Every structure is written in C-alpha cells, then in structure tokens.
Image 1 (cartoon, one colour):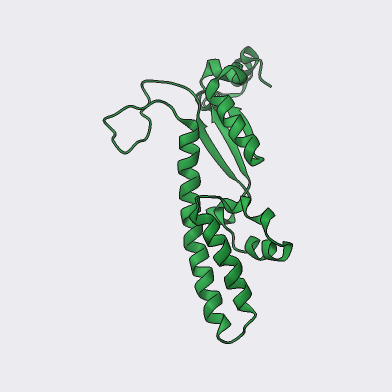
Image 2: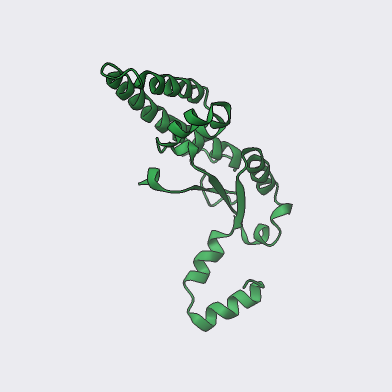
Length: 180
C-alpha cells in the first residue's frame, strides 16, 4: 500500500535517552543517536525496493518491444534510471536530468524514492520547546533543505500523553504547554 501514498513521512529520533535502544545489527551494543544515518538507511531500503520495480519494468518493456519497437525507448529510459539508483541515489534526483517526456514516463511507475518526503523530527520535551537548539534537529533540517523536503518537530511522548486525556483535561494540559 505504500506505493499508493502521496508522500513519505520519516519519523527520525532527535533526542538521547539511554533507556531507548537504537536499532543496530548488534542489539547488545547501544550506539549514539544518528538521525542522518537512520535517514540514509531508510532511503537505501526505498531505493533497493525501487530497483526491483525498475528491473521488472525493463523486463516488461523488453518483452513488449519484440512486438512493438516503441517499447525500446521505455526500456532505455528505465535502464538509465537503474544506473542512477545503483549509485544509491533516489529517483527524485534523476527526474530533473531527463527530458520531460521521460520524466513523465518514470512518474507512472509509483517508485518510492520519487515520493515527496517530510521529516518528523521526534524530540524530547525539552527539545520540542526549542527545536533549533537541538543539534540533531539542525542536522535533519540541513538534510531536508538539500532535498527540498520539510521538517516538522514533534514530541511523540507528549502526543501520546495528550491522546490519553479527556476533553477538559486535554485542554488544560495544552494550555499549560502553550499549545493550541
């Protein structure tokens, strides 16, 4: 179902907490928070999924070209994209480099790395009150700016607490936080 979505939201951890293990290959080792490394890992997984899809598209176009030569161009377009993706680059960065007709053809493929990205920078309560003071948040902002993406500061812990409150309690809690 992810291929049918309009955008991808990366929830990126931007706070230290020794009680929360960072997901790594060796679970016995607690590693420091690395929002950029986390983003790159997810990006690579999306690119790898796109590579599979592009391979299938090339195969399909090559088979169709046996009966209709117009599909040869489609196979060439997707071969160029495959070479780009093989370098670990997202399809978003490829479109501006190809003719408009080729970009429109690629856009029909529902590639995950073509989708717009929004980074939800998950901060702790202190960081949420002043995101710009959090070095992890600033790293995510820099990454987003380079990609033309957005960053939204969130505090999932606060959101969870708010979700458990009823009407008047919720209003009082939000008022105390200065949040509307």
